[in-house]
Length: 331
Ligand SMILES: Nc1nc2c(ncn2[C@@H]2O[C@H](COP(=O)(O)OP(=O)(O)OP(=O)(O)O)[C@@H](O)[C@H]2O)c(=O)[nH]1
Ligand SMILES: [Mg+2]
View (cartoon, protein in one colour):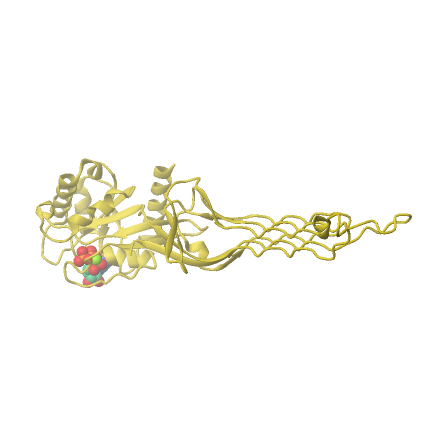
């Protein structure tokens, strides 16, 4: 649920074969063996880099190979070594060997690098097999095969943006509107019982991660409802999006609901209460003349972003704004 996953096959380069060759030059008959060694293949490494936060890039590419070493040649020429393959992954990636069912490494910080496949050594050329009793060796060594593995990469996602609000406010509808996440949506409270993550994609490969959690209610910090224990996920996000239902079916006042949720957040932790908050008024399709939103703005005396998660109105603007804020807070 909080995991982004990819399966890939990686293979290090094979070593180049050693060469069988004899020196042939004018006036130097029987010049002796001069077959060069093969080059070694490239190894495969995984490395964590900044500015990467999903494993989506692996969806389109499953096979990753480093270059093979070149064979040796006559005149004692060593084959060229194969180039290494360095694959970038986001920090927080766990690397598993699928066949061994083994965790190889937890790449939890930026700048970590680990070799996952050892290169194949190059084979020795026939020159290396010359001895006083065998001065014309006709054998050379083949290159060794590079190691290969099936890997599973797992990324524990950390959301950039967390949705909070009363049950039924439309949190799940919003995340399903702007990401590929498809949480259950229904017209009764506590539809969402577990956090759901979605990746919001914008033009030019911009994206951020959004978390939907169960609705909060008054008294949540004392154990009422479901959402409170999931606030720990929101605590790690950069921004809170506070979703208000402008026309709650229970007839409650949206402004009062806003304050009720704020009280719960403060009860949970100071750090959470101090996070950047974007207030969103949802379901504006039910307020065609905009009166309710205007009234709500006046009551709260804060900036409010009106949207309709159902019709899609205001969602694009909201996503752009969130991306902008996430970017500001990331740097
Ligand atoms: N008219 C209208 N209805 C909406 C809008 N957004 C959500 N709804 C409806 O509101 C109800 C609740 O939506 P959900 O997305 O499940 O709400 P939630 O905040 O995730 O609720 P919980 O998971 O129970 O906390 C559903 O019936 C939605 O169809 C909107 O913009 N306009
Ligand atoms: Mg929900």
